[in-house]
Length: 207
Image 1 (cartoon, rainbow, N blue to C red):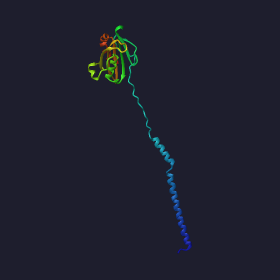
Image 2: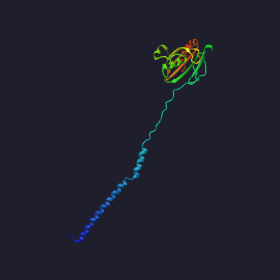
Image 3: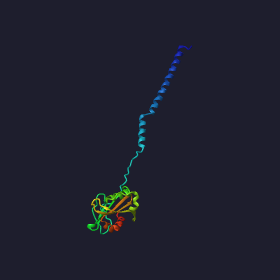
Image 4: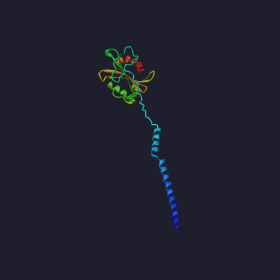
């Protein structure tokens, strides 16, 4: 058995050790909280956001195909007279005597505009002709070699759907640069025949 004074000293020493140990733990806890300062974390987040490049979107709109002006001057036969183009027509001309005249027109559209058969049948309809079949094309068309392309030429006789008069049509389809050029001469059959050579020469330069 220890004397009373000795017991008091031992008890006091134990309390002091416990008190000092508790103070040490409090200091460690406070230090850890200080390291995880929310302001520092927020600042780091902003820095990362500023360092990340922001992608930009640039759209590119392809340019439309160039369309010649309606008043473009092409080399034409001296006997052709220039007229006023209508809707979707680049140029018009007339040739021949007034009582036996023909009209020449030039148009251009992007793409194939439905294809050769569809365009030939459109022209046949203008002269009251029944639509042709794909199998009919070899006997209806003539291929003509031009300086820069190959033309598909057709020659029809019928009745003009607008005037109800007998009429002949010489038409040519020429693909150039992703576009389709259409040349058409319509009117008196004899005048069409007389102007046929000039017409073929014209489609080789008028573009």
